Amino acid sequence: MTPTLRIGLAVAALLLAADQASKWWVLEGLRLPEARHVPLLELGPFGLDLSMVWNRGVTFGLLSGDGPWNHLLLALLAAGIAVFLLRWLAKAETRLVAVALGAVVGGAVGNVIDRLRFGAVVDFVDAHAWGWHWYVFNVADAGIVCGVAALVADALFRRAPEAKEGHEGAPNAQ
Picture 1 (cartoon, rainbow, N blue to C red):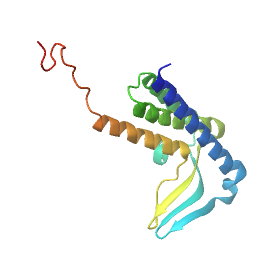
Picture 2: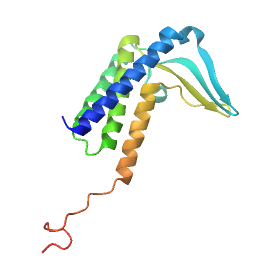
Picture 3: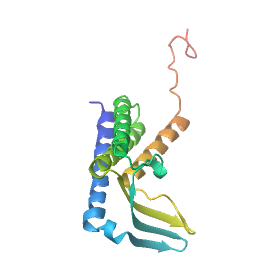
């Protein structure tokens, strides 16, 4: 097992554990489905609350539906994407890419578990400012977003490998 694969799998496992633990606490400890809303922090126009949402779709509630197979189709789609990302992770060239892919995989698996257990994803973090609320999300969603942002940054800003001297086609080759 390569060092980058080991790092990526560790990140995926840690994110998955944090996601499932937070969802357990929200559902069983805090009993947020009954409370529905718990204010946490207000700093001027900024706020952070816990608000219970059962997301039957994907990001921003897209592709949501109440059909008997909708949650299974979305779970299969997410699992397929996770398998593709695991194959990419096995070939990751840098630690940043391995960590980013691990975060996306861990988050995707966390949400797949929710879909299979509950038929929907448990979302509960509600950030807002100036009366505007961002979509309600969870730890898995945060891992996915941060992982994708890191992959985009890597694609945009990673330097191309420099050509080594003495090889055909490289500068100063004889």
